Length: 125
Image (cartoon, rainbow, N blue to C red; front, side, top):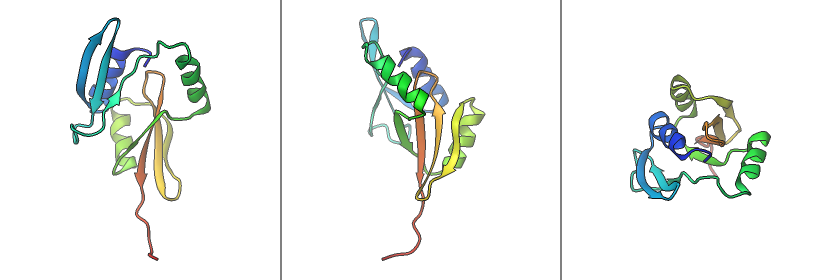
């Protein structure tokens, strides 16, 4: 993250995650957030990008439109509408890719984030 405090505000206030850890460590902190619906589930680390290799890598991903994380959601269209109403800028609107529907947004901190809905599969064996 280019600014951990800005990232923390975005991921909690805009996206709806909850803080799990916020431990000061010098000029940075060990900050993790979790889903409000699964507070004991997977933690997302809001890692500072101070290492010299990080910024060129992040820049290349952004320029190529490659998300650095993907979150599963039940309904991409509904989540897209909710986030747009909260001011989130999408670089890819909900897009049907056959077995999934995806959308990609800018997290305002130097990363693209994808949301993905797995479609119900028709048929059987």
